[in-house]
Image (tube, rainbow, N blue to C red; front, side):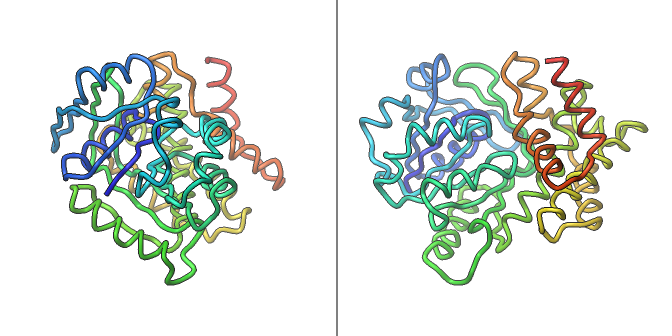
Length: 311
């Protein structure tokens, strides 16, 4: 298959390298020194169960717009930070509308799929989750990654039955697994996205405040209680939005995070490197929804306010 990695950071490069090593054609969209390193030196990925160092095809936005058509690819793998999605879609909407290639979002938050669907339609929009993976850009052209790096995906917001999109996802599932990417197809991806948001809201901002990894947070006598409370607040908003999410989901996601290896969150890495935080796409989105629903999120509000003040 032919893949385009939109946002060739830690997550995008890891999955792109897996697919490329399995024999698929992969193009990486990147910028700046990272782009130059990919073009001149190739891509290096270091993972406890996977090593990759090969030449890659990497392009900037201008080259993609002028040198490629969306139909040149079988799948666009969207790995941008959530705050970049809307602006990128404005720039590339005409390019995207000139073909029928599906887009699979592997981004944090629950706002990306609606934005994609507004431009390309629901039939081309696939929701996805990169679960239990830490992936970071250590240096231009060099990625470190850890964890099982699972992918959960499905038709957005849910699978309505047999369709060309359903058949495509089933084929994609086989491709991922053959490339060493543990994957699973769900018919309720919107629910899975909210369950992932429980984890993101619980540990990403808190890790940026405390400078602790996920394991340290979940095993701390005080922070562990905050992690659980943040998950409860996320579930309350999901329920208010009409999703079938409740205390059992909180328990399952809390148990999952407690059994994680110690992963350094992307928000902590961004803070350390002076990059913009993905705060509004996670906690900020929850607070906006809670305001509309008339819900109070005291713990999320506090963490958000402290981190905003600190940054």
